[in-house]
Amino acid sequence: MINVTKTFLPPIEEYQKQVKRAWDNQWLTNRGELVLELEEKLKSFLSVSNIIITNNGTIPLQIALKLLGKQGEIITTPFSYVATTASILWENCKPVFVDIDPEYLTIDETQIEVAITDKTTAILATHVFGNPCHLEKIEKIAEKHNLKVIYDAAHAFGVSYNGKSIFDYGDVSTCSFHATKLFHTGEGGAMFANNPDLQHQLFYSHNFGHNGPLAFHGLGINGKISELQAAMGLAVFPYMGKILSGRKKVVDYYDDALDFSKMKRLKIRENTDWNYSYYPVIFETEAVLLEAQKQLNENQIFPRRYFYPSLNTIEYASGTKMPVSESIASRILCLPLYVGLEEHELKNIVGIINRCL
Ligand SMILES: *Cc1c(COP(=O)(O)O)cnc(C)c1O
Image (cartoon, rainbow, N blue to C red; front, side):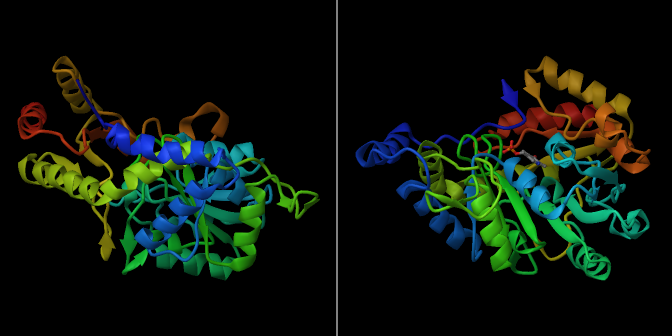
């Protein structure tokens, strides 16, 4: 069976070696040696000056929205994983959807300003499939209207834009280290900020607000990652080069072999070092997608409809119509992409899809 992704598992002995350190230390959580080491390794790998690793990729969105959204209106994309919209509502803010660019699939920056009201507090946009949003334009809009910018960079591990880590942009960027993501700790995530005051707020917020054992800086929640998850991260980390080059091979194969006369691929933004995180294709109609999906499934190949449905159509989000996002969501399919997909498997996938077009 071939799934859309396959979690990279390091040799079990290497995981056990890391876990044994937690046993030896008799220390399982609260920012132990393994978490601190993983943070240092990631900081240098990603070339960022700060990182706070967390228990998943959703809690950093909630913390950022709690601190910066202030229960106001949040301008956001309808084309993302449900966590993006759900976090806004969970923090008692109101999602205000802005449609997406049909090529880059990120929020359409040219439509942001008309959506701003006196209740708008922040923009929460997703670097979809690791493809950066229009960072300069969004920064300008935010400055002009005094808004905060939060990037859901769950897909963007290792991406850089204009030679700088993607996590360096916006007031806060968040990432996910879920088992299905490029770099993983089983469950896990991270948040990034450049402003030292904001870094401090993010930090205490993910640790119950503690200021030492007896005092508090402010309100907080439990966003801490454990040593056991950090052990997985430390065991996966040495393979990042192999993971990226293995995925690039698959992406290059699809790029060469798929028939793009009747189907579209993702357009990566200029000046981007991409991370080969997903391989979406956009069919001409939903009917073609469903036929391709059916035939792939009959061959034990299971791509995923990322992202479907468009988030503005979810009942609790009660959004307005988003024609581009709804149209793309009905026609987009993410193909299997992971290290170790074999050439005969890729040939089979490509053959089935090209015959359906
Ligand atoms: C995976 C994902 C999240 C949530 O991350 P978790 O680690 O699963 O909590 C948020 N946003 C996007 C776009 C995602 O793909």
